Length: 210
Length: 63
Image (cartoon, rainbow over all chains, first blue to last red; front, side, top):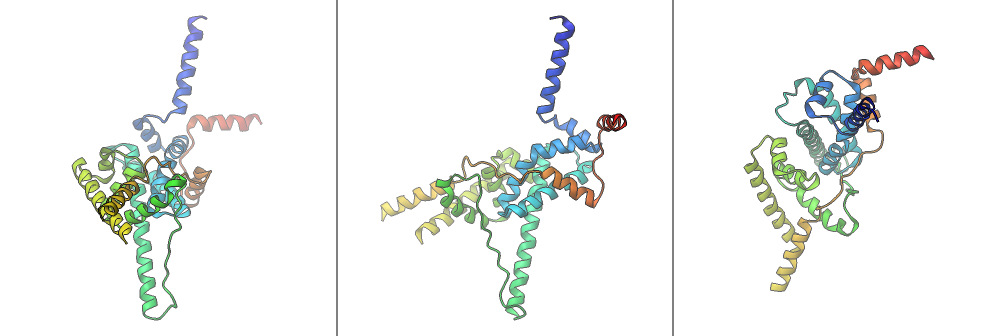
């Protein structure tokens, strides 16, 4: 084998490696800012499971989560020029996904409240109540019942505790990553997690005692 | 009574770990296509790289 052939082979391997891995953040961000379609596609492919799972964990409905996942990437596309790169791209995308999901939940809550008012004033026959049929495909069959009980308890947590606990349990994010997503210090995330666990323990004890 | 408390405590701890090791939920296939369609409907799409654009033009020219 001559030197030129070895060099060519190495270049080929490097190109293949580059293609299969997601580019370094700064390269990808630069390409996204240049409105590069291939970079945008790669970014969607790389993050779609994380974004969908995050949205699904909050809204507990696959169609709504799909919609919110699309909205998250559209927001990434529109806002990438404003991204100051003071956090990782993944963190920034998680932040958008969480905000979109919470916004959706708030809107839904307002709709339900309005439905209740309309019902109480007699304009409608019954309030609009949506009980999501949540069946997370990632939970193994033996744990489904307990997972359902835990998820119902997580839903009752105060918002910040819910965000921290969900990102840690459903997305396996470290406290450092959660702190970045929530723009908080690691110690405040530790405190949120501690309070979340205590609240959940209390709720679950009540549940099993009843 | 103590036994019942212990049993409940055990159940609570098990429940707290019910989500451990779960896999991610995945979106339906062709998410990118759906996003692209929404972007095209709403506004512009990211532009093709000059490389892929020139390649596309060459193929068009040859065919």
